[in-house]
Image (cartoon, rainbow, N blue to C red; front, side, top):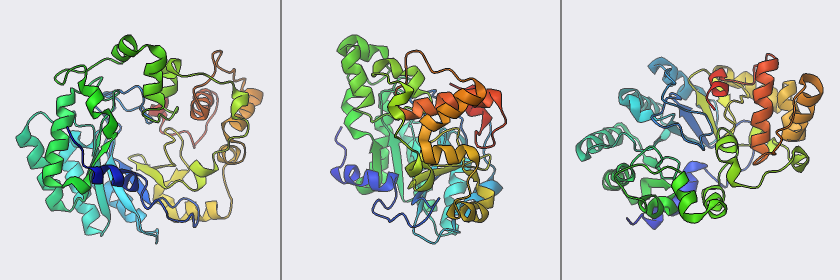
Length: 352
């Protein structure tokens, strides 16, 4: 199936917002995600937020409006994407979110894994309703990790109907290069990741996953997919800070519990989005909590040293798939040893 070159060119502009925006001040993303729920029909090996079918909580309609209204504190142009989990699992709430964003004059798009796309009629009705409500675009996930649960034919159906309703310029596929590959094992059934290892070998399959998909080693990825990439010792990350992720991330999230999640740092929050003005003032004054200050100044290695000295943390014997894997593993230890308000939601640490 051909995916529009226009969609491919525009995908990163939508994912990361206004990509050439200057870093004018702290905590001002140009693309802000609204996590309606961490519930998902998948439990993907690469998930940065540890979503799962067992997650039950959803944002209320009132909280959706409050979260969207909070974003209007930012003066710079920005856009909002409605995400999860899988937001289409509660379609009425997703539709309400789009209507609320339109009411506030906020450009909005939604993300989906397409697992719910079981008939052309259902997909057309839902996409048309969102388009009528003011949604500007749709992003459809395409990866071997989603295809481990979702038959590729459903992903293809989502793309085909989105092209019809939103048009090629506003249909985004992440990542389009995987479209052909996920169908190579058949389109009507899911494909276990082990099939790639069996066909391509562990080394090549690892490159396909880690470099081909540009995996981030946070969330589950370091644990479930780390054996497919070279591991490194904590010392390897000594010079890597988290300033970009915590201070200048152009892509961040508000979740249903009030957590302001910077960049793609699942399980780590910079504060409560209900208190956004106060939070921004603190960051502009360089007033950070000790844990965030450590990550900003010394990165995951600094957090590792603190956890080692104060809480008896022991490094993983086989090393880490990346700096985010080190960070997540240290944070898992800290959650068990102390009370850290930055390590939320707690359910993140229960769903690896």
